[in-house]
Length: 287
Image (cartoon, rainbow, N blue to C red; front, side, top):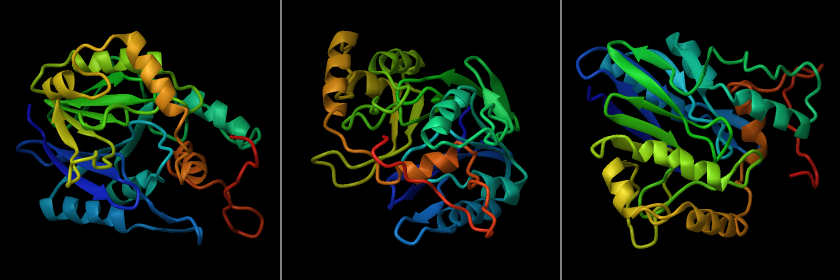
């Protein structure tokens, strides 16, 4: 099965969202959507999500799933907006409960914040499958960047989120709570065990040095041979040492605080306070 994959690149966050549609039919899934957010004003907008909806309408597609590869730390999700517009279900990895428990404490969310993943319609585990019309999607649990990371394999297309980047850029950071370089290495081996011709669609691109254009599609074979962090059979000890040293030099993503508070709620804002306004917290000297 060779799904039709259309990419939507968000310049503000370097995020790539995808629509994966049946080769001949009308069913589709949306993967890793973006809600526009201006941090200075605290205002959101739906221009990025509306581009996807316009495409879906123009192509006559029916969206079955809005899928998250993980709880993103660099952009807000538009999942509920897209689900409301299309009637789709929202899915994420079952280890969202681990993320909710961890960040529920960091943001002092209290007992009213449900930490059971019930904000989502489906919690996927390793080996689960789902359908997008006649297409079957298979779930790989690929933690390391976060505990809840998944790779969705739909036909010959694998949507890896932040686990892998383009071969010339490497792999995801592992220094968020619950992250692990060793775990990421083992997760990547699952992806690299797929057939070499499997198309890989990455969650971000930052234009590696020497490359002029953004890119987001590669293959398992290319990653195995060329990935600058993991390719050519690099042993786990070397990868872990490289990844941990590199992560120690990285600053926090610009939108990590608002993103996690919203995305761990399936893209919903925290409950409005008694004045009808939604607020996001900024823990001081905590993260």
